[in-house]
Length: 172
Image 1 (cartoon, rainbow, N blue to C red):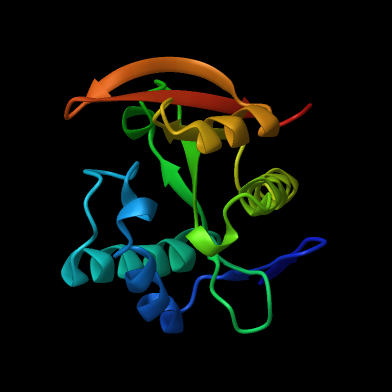
Image 2: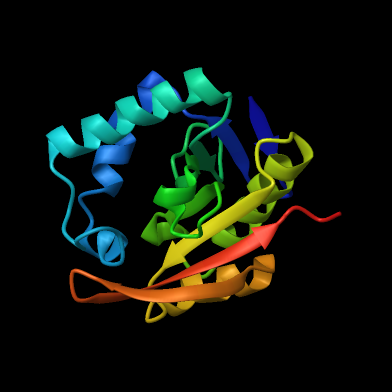
């Protein structure tokens, strides 16, 4: 499955994406606002990679590899189904996340890629409600959340880090 935008191609996650994901997950500036903020171990990255392949097999959607040029790996946009408890909303949702490689920062790739995935998620019926969880101090991600039309739902502290949940419901 492909999603294309004016400048980007988003590919359904595949087995051959592991090495690129692991390389991205080793960059301190990339993982700073993800999980513990520490680079991912090989084992943890492999577990995430396998989980997203399983998510695709079960749900028909999941992570997308972002490419700005043929054969490049410039980031990830993820969609992960969350239960009412997992979402923290009391309602099920599909959590949307994104990582753009530092080489693509400041070019609008995050907004362009996530808007395309948001639109596909709603049009395809993959989600009635999208959830974004982010740290407000991560200003670029906070701007993406705002540009996509998410509304802040709640704020919480996890492992000493302030995070926000924002939601976006499918347009009626």
